[in-house]
Length: 291
Image (cartoon, rainbow, N blue to C red):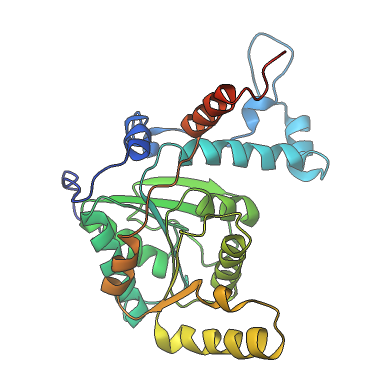
C-alpha cells in the first residue's frame, strides 16, 4: 500500500506564469469528481428531469454514427483536464515490466526526481513502467497523474495516481499524453511504446510539436540498436530522413541523465489562456477587425 502523502515540497525550479495559472485553476482533487459515463448527461428525456434514455444510450454506445459524440466527449474532457496541470513530463514504457526490472527501478527514480523538483509526472496510469514513475512521484510528494485506457487485459489504474482520467479510445488518450508535455521520456516497451515513440518523434520532426520538446530514450542496450538501424537504413541507405532527424532521439542510460535534459525544457503555453493571448495578439495586428 502507498504510504500517506506528505505535503507537496516547495519546487526548486521557478514556476512559470503558465504553470501558476494552471495550478491555481484546480479546485478539489480530481479523485473527488464523479465523472461516471461522460456522455450520459447529453441524452435526456423530454421531461423536466434529465435522465439517460436506455434506447438512445444503447444506440450511442453501439451505433458507429453516434460514436463521434463519445470521441468528442473524450477530447473535451481531456483538454479541460490538461489545462489544470503544469510542468508536465510524460513517461512511456512497458506495462509488463516487473519491480525487479532495471528499467522499472530507473523509472521510479526519475519519477522521484521529477516530483521533488515540482514537475508533474504524467503516465498512462497502468502497471509496469507507468506504475514505477507514478510511484516515484507519489513518494516524493509530487504530482502523479494517470491517463489510463480500458483494455480486456493487463491495464489497470495503479495505486500511486493522484489525478486521473480514463479513456475508451487509444487515439484520444495518445493526444492527451502528448498535447501539453514539455518532455517525453520513453523506457523500453512493446508495440504500444514503439507506436507512441515514433508518433511523438514524427510530430516533432514535422513541427506539430515544438522542436525544443525532447524525446528522451532511456536504456542504451534497448534503444541504441534502433537508433543504429534508423541511422543506417533510413538515413544512409534510403535518405528517408535527414541527418538532423536522428538528433531528435536522445538516448540516455540513467534517471540523472534524463533529468539533466528535462531541466533545460520550458513550460508549453497551453489552453484557454494561450488562446486569449493569441486573440489579443491578432487584435493588435488588426487581424479579424472589421473595416
